Length: 229
Image (cartoon, rainbow, N blue to C red; front, side, top):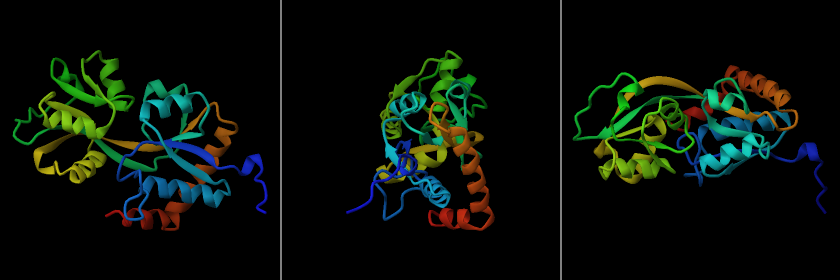
């Protein structure tokens, strides 16, 4: 008969959205996503098992804010999240920018202010949507990256503001790569975000950052990422 696990041994609940190559739902050819593998490896080393659960991003945010999950993956920093979350050291990186249709002339925007008066889409709850909202820039909200790409291809919008790496991967899966092009605006860090309402979250954050530093120092971090090249 298996022993009962103590409360401190129960898996830590981490919420994510399908966001390849950072997270895969379901796994692809045995690969879970490099952020998932990095985080699971660190918590295993810490002796605190962690489980990644997939939800729509807006619901994941609300659940973590309420303290019903320990954290969020993959998570970028913005002011609206600071009151609710602690941010780990950078676990990966991305490139913010916009997608246009391949036959659409790129206006070479240099900032998101240029989206004002344009037909632009963003995924609900993502940092890009929060940025547009904070500037009072009208935009079309969609639930997922897949929907956003199809809305762009279908000419309902002319710009899709998001992250390059995940959307290029998704576009390849959907057979849309030859129909879109990307214009970069800025590089960004991604984090594991810890709910401020989760018990001992600040202590877990400190231990996680120590584990992340060790994972990079011993080469394990690079080994994980190399599987996705």
